[in-house]
Every structure is written in C-alpha cells, then in structure tokens.
Length: 114
Image 1: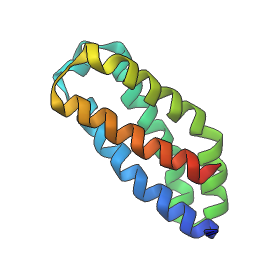
Image 2 (image 1 turned 90 degrees about the horizontal axis):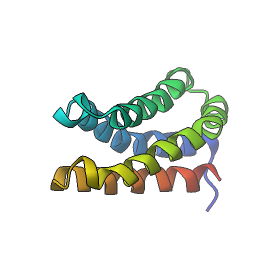
Image 3 (image 1 turned 135 degrees about the vertical axis):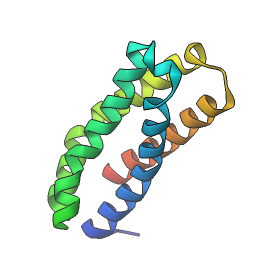
Image 4 (image 1 turned 90 degrees about the vertical axis):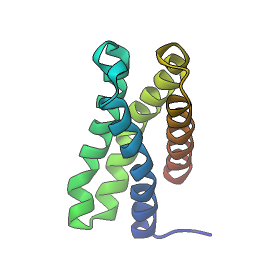
C-alpha cells in the first residue's frame, strides 16, 4: 500500500513520539550527567525532531519528508551509538527498554523514508 506524503509525515511523526520519550528519559537520567556520549545521543535525537518541527507545523509534507531523509543518517548514527553504549551505561531495564523502543521506532522511520 502506497501512503500519501501527508500520511507518511503523520506516521513518521507518530513514531517520533517514541524517540521523544527516549530522548527525555536519557536527558534527565543521572547517567547523562556523567556520560558525554549519552548526551551526544539525546542531543542528536532532539536535533532531528527540531529540524522537522517547522514543516510539520506548516503541514508541508514534502518539506518534512525531504528534511527527514536529509537528517536520517544522523538519527540512525545516534541510535547505533546508544545501542552500543547502553550496556555499559546501565543494565537497568529502563535503559534496555529505551534501546528497544528507539531502535524499533528508528528502523520503522527508515523503512518509511526509503
């Protein structure tokens, strides 16, 4: 099934709600106060979402999708970094679930943008 640009934008934005929750969790974790790489991850997640805010607010699906495709590599890289460092940052279930949630959302975003 082919989705319209507007539907794609809405689906990506829905998936970004998961990314936002992971970003917020990481940003406010005690571990982020001591780990530069973890800070790099939550900043990269925020930067991706910030770049899409204008086109989303304007309802400009074409610009939104163009920007998302342009910035996706950095989102993917931040996700891969988090998956790599997560076990050494914390083995707590919250961090494990954050890694699963982020990977799942970012993988689906990648499929939608492909």
